[in-house]
Image (cartoon, rainbow, N blue to C red):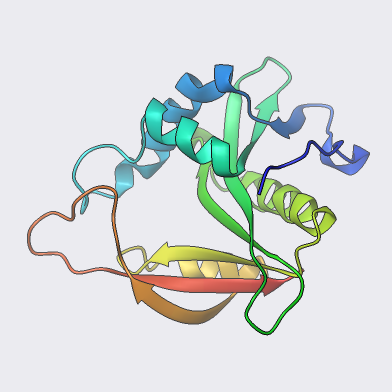
Length: 178
């Protein structure tokens, strides 16, 4: 499904922070932000993403970015609209690759950019949103619970990057009604 541009509600603009949809020119800075943020995932081989992967997912969905007044990229999150559930008539949203500059973690940026992405998904007709959290990141589900997400299942982990030897991992599906 092709995303249409939605104007950003005034509530998403702050004197020191602007939230906007990423464009192709942002890709190099996004790669740096995402790989820096996900460097903690030492159980996986290589980098979290690269320019080709980001360009590919931006064809399917969108990346929302948060910049400060100087244009420094502080946070991002990928979002897309997915088809309705088998028993539903409204689409579901999906969030992924939430990244906050490590120097700004704990400042509320994650909550703000997730809320902005949820607002956009709601405007696009989604009734719920899902995300996948890796089981090897046990610190994440409690954070997302505070954002209103609950665990709704598990799924097989099919990584773009290989797991290092000795690790086992699965995805924890977390969902929220919009």
